[in-house]
Amino acid sequence: MKSICSSPTPIGQCGLVRHRVRRLVRHLSIDLSPLRDSRDYRLLFSSGVITMFGTMIAMVAVPYQMKELTDSYLAVGLVSLAEFVPMVVCGLWGGAIADALDRHKIIVLSELGLLITSSALMVNAMLPDPQVWVLYVMGAVSTGIACLQRPSLEAVIQQVVRHDQQSAAAVLSSLRWNFGAIVAPALAGLLLAQYGPALAYGLDSLTFLLSLLLLWRVSSLPPSEDAAPASLKSLVEGVRYAVSRHDLMGTYLVDIAAMVFAMATALYPFLADELRAPGALGLFYSAAAVGALVASVTGRWTARVQRHGLGVIVAATLWGVAVALTALAPNVWLIFACIALAGAADMISGIFRMTMWNQTIPQEFRGRLAGIELLSYASGPMLGNARAGLMANLGGTRFSLGAGGLLCVGAVLALAAALPRFRRYDARTDEHALTEKARREATLQTSTQESPA
Image (cartoon, rainbow, N blue to C red; front, top):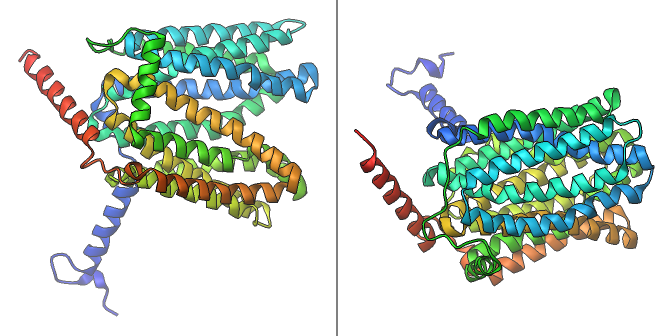
């Protein structure tokens, strides 16, 4: 039989198939243009990859050491409670100073502070009698410092990455996070089992030290000339700006609703027990990160989507559907698949939300809005796990998963109906997106003209 590849036409059937395959691969591959075009983004990205590993290791080490020292569920749970207030206060204040001060200095000084707290945990772990209070205090302090730093890290992407590359940068950021979330906890488990928490904290300190060397080389990132000084008034102005933008409020409210109604990681130990598969607990915790990693690796297609609000709505709805399907899954691997699907949908929602933020929020408000964003995506999972536990007490694990997923779908669709500007958002026509694009193009043109020949 004659092969289709022997077609005499310039682009025969075989060539057409190859062309379509190449297009599919290109659309599903990772867009590395922000790394290629921006030196500062390369430094920030490399720093983030390094510190991600250390931070994830420490996140496992602190509750592990607390359990070893106290053998108390309450003591372990209080670690998160001790971190909540610093997260709220420092997240908002971090947004205010990110708009008022040089973001590069904030990032470097915060990284130095995190190095000190990690080193303190290491020294405490090396003592003959490690102190429990150190875990609470250093946990709260490190969370506060990280939340002071996070708005500047989020806002600085807008300054170092081109407007048309923001979606690609969002994909790369999610890829970095998910890779660390899968690999680092497994490494932490091995280190803690074999060598104890001191080495884990020591490795965390080393990552901060290496990160500092990279961050030091990032260019100065001063605030805009008319930037408001950090104050309660500036915080209120940031909140007012966010409330005035129904499209932005949609990104916050949909994400909070999705997390509150469908986040259920607190149920995973009970789900594993019901399946009589205690070894599956680790699989359940890593499943969402696996799905999110796949979504990141194949996420180049998201750059072609311009209806970001609708994209968030669809992705959040799929998240709820996937969680509801988890309630019906009869075995470990189907549950793993459902949780992975939920993680992928959540990551796609995150990519669209980050792109929308970085393409439409003016630079003078970006830090304060990043502080609000931090609260929206950090508080939702905490409240969601509390909801999951309460509903499980009423009707069991499967009831909590199924009802939570359906409530998520209902809440997301209700918000979509109530916020038409969010639902109809289009980056090609939105006034805020077009204004920011024009401003950045003018800034780039001015800097090019002022640069020496």
